[in-house]
Length: 258
Length: 256
Image (tube, rainbow over all chains, first blue to last red; front, side):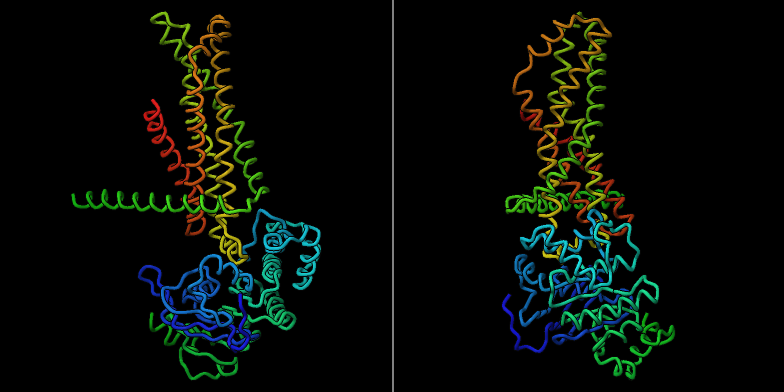
């Protein structure tokens, strides 16, 4: 992929639409993610946060709109170009999505095995290094079913960073973890951004996590981004919808709409 | 009354739609099969799963089928003094029809269900999405090895089941019914032509293809969590069994 470092935005989403049957999930999303920042997209369950990042990495084809990654329109890419593009990405799935037929080291080294000529020993060395980046050691030969929830997420994160991507996508990184493990993951996300200088998009509804890791926060509501700002700006937003969401109140405009 | 028409209509439409999708999926598999490189490790692993692990059930099926065929044909043939031809009937039925069809049904129950359940689980736990994000095409990585394994292993399984089935028939006829072993063996081979064996093996090849394509399709397009995986698994077994039975008739009729 030809890199165009002149653009300030690593990812730019323009007027993105996606429907599933009669359910119009994304209704014209506009979002800019700057090079090297951590953009956190917040929003209720089922508002299309996952659909948005799956469109960005090309897992879901949008109905309308464009997505620019490093200045290139990726919505017109064919399978081969998409695969090229995906090598720049790493994605952490909500439940880890580890391949349960393979031990940890093969999971983490999967991309290396597929796309490089490294020998198994060399791959294991890289895997050990990546695992230490996420704070794990001596787990290489365990199977995913032997890991706890927090460890699965960390192994999955190690897999996401194994190919040294430029962009990391986190799908609800703290969901389903206890508060302490959630904070460990938050710290890890911050550390990785500093060490690897990646651009990242995190989707979450965990506000503690959002405030902690975000450079900027965007709120997705009714298929559109209704507000973007730094954590302070979001906290002091005058938008009632944003206020109801970040304070987690059951009374307010969001619940009235439904 | 209108409800009935509606039901029939929508069922027919759904059937046509599904057939179309399976066909598209089949061509996708073919396309990726011929695009190098092939993942020999995965092919080998699937060959073990489809072949070696299915062998016991297929052999048990075959020996009992051969035995019951001998018993049953003997009962009929004795009434017009044609006991001597039991061997011929057992061998021809095993090689042309029962070997491939029953092996196909056993393998679709064992392997087809396994493929649909495994791929379905991978789908609902986002492992298939994860493959895409690792710049790996899941059809190439997961499905082509299963397809190739089923394709080439089914004929081998059928060869085994033919041999064991014929042996079962021999056992019952000679040891139980007291037929002369020399005559039985002679009658078994005298009327058998190479074409009979080819037809059986050709069927096995086609059935392997049917099992892999339908079961992988069901697994690959699973949605809706654990319940969805269950449904896909059931559909994989039911549809591949039905398609095997129907296509078996047409292959036999065409090559009559």
